[in-house]
Amino acid sequence: MVVLDKVDKAKALTLKQLAEENPEYINYITEAIGLLITENEMLRKIASRYSHDLRSPVTNIDMLLQLYEKAEDSGDLQLYIQKMNKSVVRLQEGFEALSSERKNALVDRTQLRLTFLDEVLDEVKRKLPIGTIFTTDFSGGKKIIAHQQSILQCFTLLIELYSNTEQPKTIHFNTEKTWEGLLLTIVYPSFIDLTAAYDRTVAPQDVKNKGKDSQLAGWNYYFAMLFLRAMGATINIDESTQNQTKILISFTQ
Amino acid sequence: MIKNIWIIDDDEIFQFTAQKYLELKKAAEKATSFTNGHEAMNHLQQIVHDPDDLPDVILLDINMPVFDGWQFIKEFTRVQEALQKKVLVFLTTSSIDQADFDKAKGINIIAGYIVKPLNEEKINDILNQYRELSAV
Image (cartoon, chains in turn brown, red):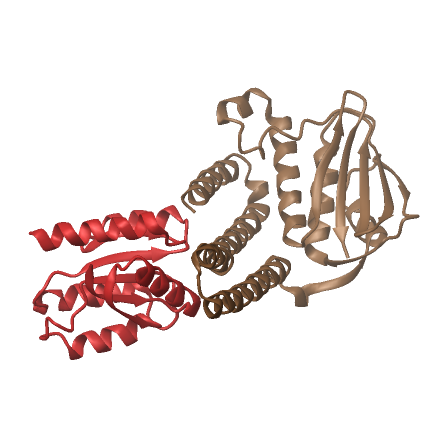
């Protein structure tokens, strides 16, 4: 928990610094801080559940096993087995509760709506400078259950991160069906450094050395990651080479 | 051997196993269990002037509904001066949260911090502290 607090304080400080240097980020920052608080609260709940509801039956089983080994009376043996069974049931209940909390804690489920990726993309396109070319292949599907405002902000951020570069502005979107839902791949035809600002391991002076564009691209990616994570989706940089940058977003449906 | 030990824990299985351990180790003459701090505090207030009934050692769980270990410690600090004997309070917890450990370190009436599971070594530690106190 102490570690979590330190990470949050460091992150909040960096976000404050970012807001001072780039006032245009203020809306994202406000929402991001809200998401960080929610996420931290959820991690606290998980840590407490782990500590009490999961660890407690495990320690009971440990103690009962030691008693079982020393037992001489068959009545005692029977009693220890009964108590062990009870502990196993409690452990199972703890895991089930943890799993459902994990799913529900991230986002207000009532705000999730059926969303069409192509419609979101059309809306984002309208905000972008003319000349950005999109190629799309939604053959894997385009329907997801999502928080519409978050997905819109996420798409805007991911597209904006490329609009400042001098490269040909062609972005490719495609979807694939996976066993757990839908995988969206976004491909940019050049290298974008996405690690500069969001990476908690990068020291501030190193971030500065990477240049402002790189810092902003990193922040765009960081905020997009937060918006997606709040919906239970995951985002990864699959490939970042001189020729292309590939981002994978996995929606569990 | 400890004359009178209290186990304050909402976990019925821990109460059972702790009592069995104490019995097997012949560590206590009398062990009494309470399911929350409130129940234990009510009983303590009734026997506050009766040193024979007062516990010598308390094993106190931190995470309990109704009245948790920290609340019990707070109330216990208030009544402690009226007690006619020194009571050793050990926090027993399944929590491995460093924050709980740090909080416990700052409270001087806590004699020890025991992370569950309870085992022979931990019972020996409790017994050693009890013997040291009795010798004084």
